[in-house]
Length: 188
Image (cartoon, rainbow, N blue to C red; front, side, top):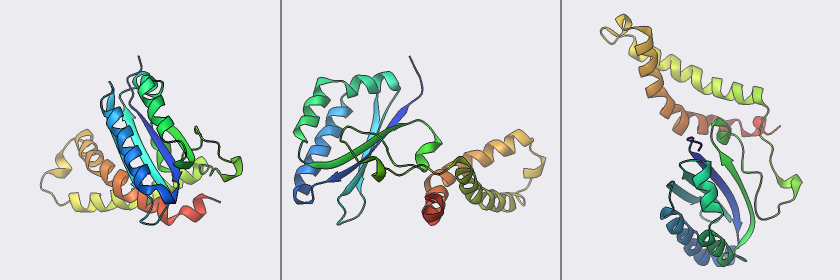
C-alpha cells in the first residue's frame, strides 16, 4: 500500500444559470467524501465573483484510498446528480511540485485537446523557483545573521530552521505570486 498522500485538483466550468444548484451539489460531494476512509480534506473556490470557473482540491492518504473513493457507488451516484450542471471538467492527481505550474489536463468530461494548457518546460519551472527562493533566502540570511549565537549553531541546525521557515513562505505566498507575475512567460 502506497503511503504518499494524493491530491486531486479539478477545474470545472459550470452553467452560470445554475450556480445555487452547483454550490449545493459540490458541497454534497465534499460531505460524502468526508465520510470515506482515507479522506484528508478538501476545498473549493470560484475563480471570481462572476466567473463560471471553479477549482476544487481534495486529498486522500494514498492512491488506494483515493481509488476506493473514486470507484465508490456513493461517488458515482453523486456525479450522476451533477449531470447538466458542469460544462467542462479537468482533473489531475498531484503528489509534488508540479501542481504549482499546471492546470488539470485530464478528466471525465471531454475537453478539446487544443484547449488544454501545457505545463512550462522544466528549465522555466527551475528559473521560476529560483527567482522566488533566492531573494527570500537572502533576506532570511540577513535577518537571522545578527541573532546572538546563530553563527555558532551547527550548519544542519541552521539549514533545518531555514527550510522550516521558508518552505511555507515559498509554498503559500512567494511561488504563487511569482508564477502569477511570470504567467505570460511561462506559457510561451
